[in-house]
Length: 513
Image 1 (cartoon, rainbow, N blue to C red):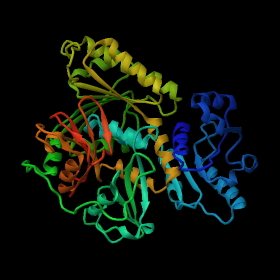
Image 2 (image 1 turned 90 degrees about the vertical axis):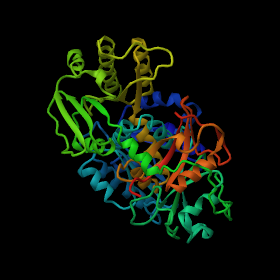
Image 3 (image 1 turned 135 degrees about the vertical axis):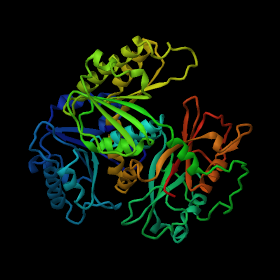
Image 4 (image 1 turned 60 degrees about the vertical axis):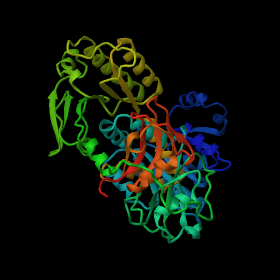
C-alpha cells in the first residue's frame, strides 16, 4: 500500500505530502516494514491508537488531512469501518468546517479499503462522496477473466499497480470547452501521447469504450490511459478525421470475439469455500459449455447456469490422493485458492504453496500427464495461484521449475491489485466507476486479439494503423503484447510493429455493440 502511495506522491498527485499511519498495532512491526521503502520512509510517521477515538485522531491532526485511507482493524471486531469513517468526519468538520468530503478536486478524499462484501459495504457505498475498494473484489474478478483469456492478468497488473508503467487519469471537460459537444470518436486527435478510453457521465454506469457517437458533454470527464500526469491536450485536433486503412481482412471484431467464446475451458478450482458471487463472475466470463470442477473440503453452493457446467467434488486439497484423483492433466487451468479468508498473508501464502506443490507432484507422476518440459515447448496447463506476497510468487515459480514439468504458473497478488486500486481511488475518486467497469464481464472488457486481425505479418505496421482498424470495429486499441512476453500499453501512434501470428493486440471491446 505504501509503495502505491509513494508513487502517487512522486508523480505530484499530492504536493508536499506528509503520510501519517494511525493503527492499533505494535509500532515496531510497521516501522520494520517501512525499511524497504528507502528514503520515502522518512516522510511516514507511525502512531499507535484507535482510528475511531477522537483523542487519538486529534493526536495525529487527522482533522486537517486532505486524503484519508481507511482499512479494517482485524484485531477489534467491534471496530466497524462505518464507525471509523463517521469518527473521521467529526474530526474533519471540527477542523475544516468549510470543506466537505467528496469527489471533486478541492474536496477531502476518503477511501475505505479492504471492506468485506455485505451490509457494511452497502452502508459505506450509500454514503455520498466516500470511495471504497471491496475486499478481494478485484482479485476475484481478474481471476475469472484470466481463466477465459490466459495472459490478461498482465494488463490488469499494469492498470492497477501504480508502480508499473501506464496509469489511468480523468480529464474534466468543463475546463476544456473545445472538447465539449464533440463525439467521442474525435477525442483521439486531441491527445497525442495518451489514449482516451471512456467517458464518466452522471447517472451512467457504462464508462469504457462508449458508443463512438456519444457526445462529450460539459459535465462529463474523459478517462485516458497515459504514461504519467504530463500528458498533452491539444487545443486543436491533429486527426484528419478520416481513417486510412489498407486491409483485405473483412472479419469483424465481433466475429473474432465469438471465435474466442467457442474455445471451451476445463477448469479445476481447489479450495473453493466462498460465496456464490465469484463463481457467478466465472460463469459470466468463461466461454459457453466450459466445465468447472470444484474440489472443496465442505459443501459449497454453485450458481444455476445454462452456459457453464459446474461439478462439485468433496475432498481435501491437502491430500495428494484427492488431488491426483481429479485427473489434473485433463484440465486447461487449475486455480489454487487460500483455504480461509481469516489467515494472515504469510499463512495464506504458505498453504497455497503447499497445495500447488501437490498439484505439481500429481502432474509429474501421472502416466497420462504432460511430457517432461523440453526447450520451446508451450505449456498445455496453467496453474493460477491467489497469493499475497512477492516472496510467495517467487517460491511458486521455483517450485514449478524444480519438477521440470510443462506447466505455466500465474500468481495473482491480490493485495497488490487492491492496494493499487484503493490508492488510485484515494487520489482520484472518479476512478471508482472506471475500475468497477473494468471488472464487469457484462460491460466492455479487455480483450487479447490475434495480431493477424490487424496485419498480414509481412510488413511493419504503425500503432496508428492498429488503432484505426480497432476504431472501425467499435473497439479501442490500447497496446501490444509480443510472444516474448513484452507488453507495451499506450504506444505512440508512430510506433511500428512487425507482428507475428502469435502476437496479441490489447483492445477494449463491448461485444453487445
